[in-house]
Length: 263
Image (cartoon, rainbow, N blue to C red; front, side, top):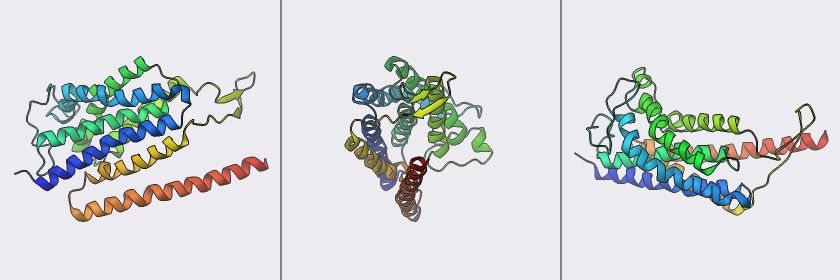
């Protein structure tokens, strides 16, 4: 039996997570230079537009299909049976679209780390690769009944399955590309002697993007809840944790500026 409440909440969470794409777009565009606005906006758009068909054609089956523990099954357009993967009372298509927006979020994490120095066509290839193979395979290990899951590994709302995968991909991409041109001044031996700030061109857009992302997190984390008390706890954590993190970052930034100005 399907639960109307569970299904509606998962779909509402899906809409909030999808809206995070707008948050990423505004945040990244606002904190980059004006000349790169079109590039960064198109990257965020194509993460979802490329990732959705890629995940539905191949990725979902590789992630949630019954497989060897390393990889799921090849099931184009999600035609198979996935009752073992579905949350209680939630139909397949609601679960599938929820996982699709998760996949797009994993891909989008990388766009900011590689901002202002990535060719658009190359980024589109990356977006297809992570949605077709990288995220689904690693997701199968964690959420699809793969070897990590079999060992008892638990990931409540994607801290590993989504953010570690996206974060490691971003780190690899940033390492390959190197810093933005003009970020560092070096001496003749290549040693960094000065770090230059590269201000964003629209702080208002960047700040609005941050608030949209924060709003989206209530769906991102909250849709994983299985009970009402758990949902309340999730909302408290999603409110308090980023607020305290922001204040902590502000304090450390002040201290860092004081130290730099006294040297």
